[in-house]
Length: 396
Image (tube, rainbow, N blue to C red; front, side, top):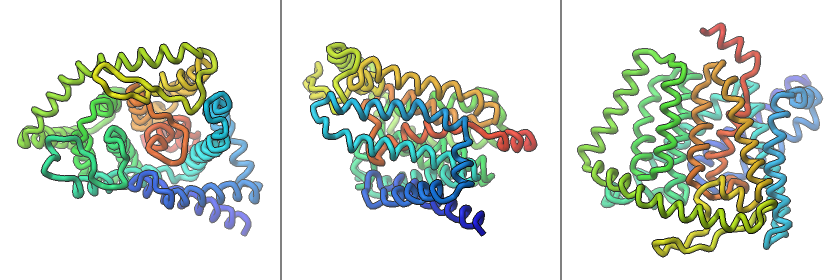
């Protein structure tokens, strides 16, 4: 009876978590949706406190507990950095967010161990697909081909770059979900996500997606003729859509314009580096932002790259913590490849490249970066268990 009660508790917090992920993918940064995560968190903690079996199972997961050290140090250090910022009182809020993010990764790990990974991947995939459909329905069709895909669904990410990132994450999670369930007909949703990604006209996410997708299909290829057929069909559909809607000319213009804007971006990075070097060791603190007018008269507040943002806010110490965290994630790639989990690696690669040109910091309540940074990190840190290796070997 005790085992049955424990199992029900674990299923309950995982189902709350899956529901949170699904609705959060659609309704970005809506506080009422976050209540689902709070419910999952409370039941998860209660399960560890009340069930000795669950507590021992979690604490004896030494590989994962070890992998949490660097994320915890990263989060804790930047929470402490509030003390030497302009608003030291924010430390309580940042510590709370640190706790949320650590629990987020822990629940993902537990769900993975208990066989609910496909549910989470499916929640992201279907949530992002729903967001894409709602955005395409509600966006102003008059300007859909001449301006960036934005101001459509009111609860979509405010930044169209993050919206593009959502679409890319949705594709990779869809690949995992289809792999785990065998429901190949769901590939029909991919064109919707990819069309939305293209219509955002966001170069950074598109480049990151292309690089991660190239990794997926070139490293240890194991796809069948059907996979090739589906891939070519989707690609031809998107190319045909771009060509016949005359969207291609606008896309080429933006790609050409990116060459000019790269010099503007370099100017921002140069200024961010100069400000960072004024306090090189510990940085300016968590709340620091830029106050800079670039060469074309735009007021800039972010570094436009998470790597310089960590240096600005946390100094060399904070930057090295971020690099160590990413480095540890890179070391886990081999384990995922051994288990034929290339899509999991692709999600992580996408996130690393995506944040090369996105400077919004990544600690806070459930927002875009929970999907764009912390989910890919949780995926790569959640290395396959021995049972998964045995199952994969048997399947092969």
